[in-house]
Length: 451
Image (spheres, rainbow, N blue to C red):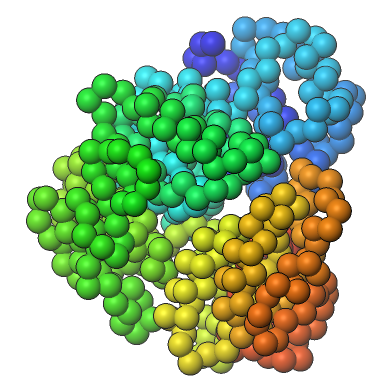
């Protein structure tokens, strides 16, 4: 496929974070961009404001006639999350269009560029965004396709004036195997997406295949302790080829030293909180050093890094109340997040609002979730967000709650969370999960800011 010839693009499932990035990319190139998604969100509203036409009706009649006939200048992209019985998808197939997965298009975009790909079952969004910011802020420059909305740039796609591209490499549906990275990072490989892979061994196999895609003379940067071999190991808490030391909190902010074979960068101030984000920063710094970016430029960039929306995001930060929202939806992500909360606010009562994501993930990791959520002083547990799944008999939030040992715990609705905020006036509260729990963010923010 010759992307230079593309004049019009239709995206089925345009509201997804990866699909929306492609929509913005092709709009930036001057293409006519249309798309479909099931529901309107803040992200799709923003896309519409940027001049992209979106329908929320899965009906053939909602498709602009300019997209009906296959043509060399027309590209149709779909996400695997789209139901198999989608009328719009079926129409394009019946008309003879070749439908491309998002990952295939991303592979084509990146194949002629110097590609830095960041993979991992967690940590990849923040790390890839951090790498992109280091390159942008230092003046090295890059383009980027990110798995979240960068708080520095207000978007999930960046446009550069050089041949370097930073890509979040997604293991879901083995999407990252379309890439041929010059630099590959693997942040983690905990069991996840077992509805796709079946078991952890097949997940690890896919990560190894991803690493095998690194070009000749390319570089593999692997978190120490993972089951893969790379030229450079890194860690946020123990000696490795690149590692953090002297990690500490000063006035609610994280500081650390970075060490590699080239020497030490001392007293780095990280613009976002979290012990796990210190480790993410070590990986990002290692890429920057590989590209010859100076220690001073690295320190300046990390100080100004504002993170990613819904990744340890401060919504309200006042003396009387701290409210943080996070996307964590796997036990190890939760562990890293809640451990950092304890380190930052050791004397405050930790109120956790958590929405489990997927019946299969809850089933597969119920004991891990129970252990980690027991760290909360008070747990408000929402019902499982099904996403693409049907319910599984016996798998429920009540089942999970019974296994949790926190002294104060209950199952709640969204409205009950808001009632809790109004009446209990907690001084430390977090909302956590990958479903639609983010709909609580603005109402909770309004409650705390007008209290």
